[in-house]
Structures are given as structure tokens and as C-alpha cells.
Image (cartoon, rainbow, N blue to C red):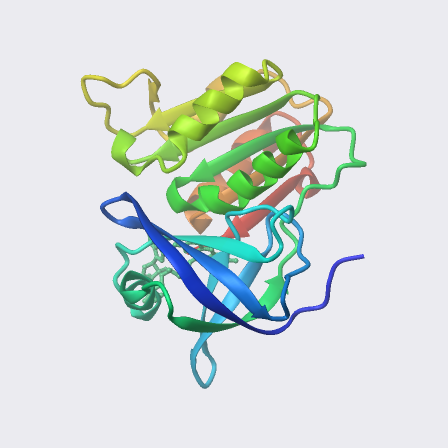
Length: 235
Ligand SMILES: Cc1cc2nc3c(=O)[nH]c(=O)nc-3n(C[C@H](O)[C@H](O)[C@H](O)COP(=O)(O)OP(=O)(O)OC[C@H]3O[C@@H](n4cnc5c(N)ncnc54)[C@H](O)[C@@H]3O)c2cc1C
């Protein structure tokens, strides 16, 4: 059964810059000493009465004493400014774990993961958890970003695809550069092109609302029922 959300306190132990505008922060749990959660869930950071920002947990439940958050700080609002200012030693209060964008292992359907930019965070946690714990079944990730520099965790997914032939990884960008070895297209068109059939499929789609709607339309047009498209809307 999923853990109940509760107020938590943690301390920042490290901050890393993945790309100029995508940052990771490690939080060491203090109270409780470990966080029980499922890969794909998120935490809520309070900024004032009724003002919160959600951040998905990028790390897996296998390290419950330290969670990693990952943010795109380009939006530049209250959440981005807070994340950009984080430094080791800072205390962070949050509520969690929250959300139901989690993978059901007992579900025998073939998962198709679709992420738009920073929407990759919960999917990264789910995939890392699945492959760390011996998930041998086929899974596909279609990961879209405006250009290759915005594909956080790209090297990790390429490595995963080399180690686990059942995992197929399709990075797709709106704008390629010279060294680019992936594809160039829009996310919904890439999903259309790379999904020949939807028989026995379950989709996990994460990112902006517009992309989620368009990807759902593509999959439903191919015959998938709407309920088989699970989604996490970041913006
Ligand atoms: C369930 C959930 C999980 C989330 N997990 C993460 C996460 O792991 N990492 C993360 O960076 N963000 C995540 N978000 C988004 C996050 O909560 C904030 O909305 C984001 O950090 C922007 O906050 P802000 O205060 O800086 O900007 P705001 O003032 O809230 O937003 C400014 C504008 O930018 C839009 N916007 C917000 N984020 C983006 C984006 N990435 N790309 C394009 N437009 C955007 C907003 O809709 C708004 O119009 C999540 C949101 C939800 C609902």
C-alpha cells in the first residue's frame, strides 16, 4: 500500500548542474530518517499560504534516506529561484510522497514512456527502479526536448539501452546539432511514427499538458483506450 504523505525535513547534501538550466539537488532526510515512496511520486515544497511547487523524485526508493530532485529552472518563478539558490547545508521542508504516476509491476502490458523535457524526472525514477530490480520485459522511452542540450539523463538512457536490449530508447529533438545521433521531430509525431501498434500497450506520458493531449490523441486514434494513457502534467 502507498505511504501516506507527511511533513518532512531534509538537508541539502549536494547540488549538481546537469545542463546550464537543469539542476539536481540531493536531500538527506532528517525527519523521518527515510522516506517511503514509489518511483514516480513527487514532493510538495511550500512557499506561503496555498503556494506550493511540486518536484518529482528523480532517485529510486532503493535509497530512501537520500532523495534527489531535478529541476528545469528556466521558468524563473518562485520555484525555479528557490531551486537555483539551494546549497549544501540548507534545510528543506516538504510534504510527501504524493501522486499516482507510478508503474504497476503486476500489469503485464508493454509500457511506452513518453517524456517532454523535464517531464523525464518521474520516468527516470521508474526506469531506474525497474532495471535495477531485474525488469526483463520490453519497454520503450520516447524522450523529446527542444535540442540535445535539454535531454537530461540522455547518457544514462543510452547506457541502459546498451545493457538491456529489451529497453528501446528514442531521443528526439526539435532542433538537431552536428553531433546529434538521435531523431528530429515533434513528440506526438515521433510517438505516431515509433508506435506501429497499440495492442497490449500502456502509456506513461509526462510533461506539458498540450503534449500529453496530443500524444493521447495519437494513441487513441491507433485504437488504445483512453484509460491506458497515464499522465503527469508538469505545466
Ligand atoms: C506533479 C508535478 C511534478 C513536477 N515535477 C517537476 C520536476 O521534477 N522538475 C521541475 O523542474 N518541475 C516540476 N514540476 C513543475 C514545478 O512544480 C514548477 O511548476 C516549475 O518548477 C516552475 O515553477 P516556477 O515557480 O519557477 O514558475 P511558475 O511561475 O510556476 O511558472 C511560470 C510559467 O512556466 C510554465 N512552466 C512551468 N514549468 C515549465 C517547464 N518546465 N517548461 C515550460 N513551461 C513551464 C508554467 O505553467 C507557467 O506558465 C512539476 C509539476 C507537477 C504538477
